[in-house]
Picture 1: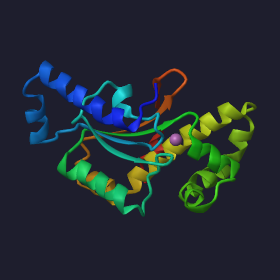
Picture 2: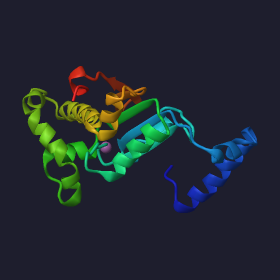
Picture 3: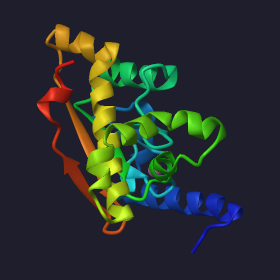
Length: 203
Ligand code: CO
């Protein structure tokens, strides 16, 4: 059932009450500090709340989301999230998570979007042209777009390795965290772990 605006407020009250009944100290502990082990970089798509899919609680995921889960090397917003996650929170895992049926990926593939969104997703358009032969060999359009969603995640993992934050960690041999690429299959609710080729890591 879709929620109306007022039900967001009433649901919040009910949720907070339930949490407090389960553990009277829950909000006292939660308000003290955060010690997340994971940085989640995901798509803004409303179907992509990773805490629901991984049954994690508030305080476990540090989050950055944008259209089509881009790791942009000129995005000061993303870069500061990464810096803080690695150097202050010292997360143990960085996860780029895309999804099948991504509107940003299909719009980039079709080349029909316009305005700022077209600008934002243009790296995926370039990626689809780069992998034209592989994509064209896939007959079903749905599977072709699924593959492009996977390639998009792998490209963003590659971009993470190119950031100053990760390069500095590699130089100092301080890379005590792992970088993962995931795709969420919304038709099953399952996470697919992508294999990260070593060639993406040695930048
Ligand atoms: Co998406």
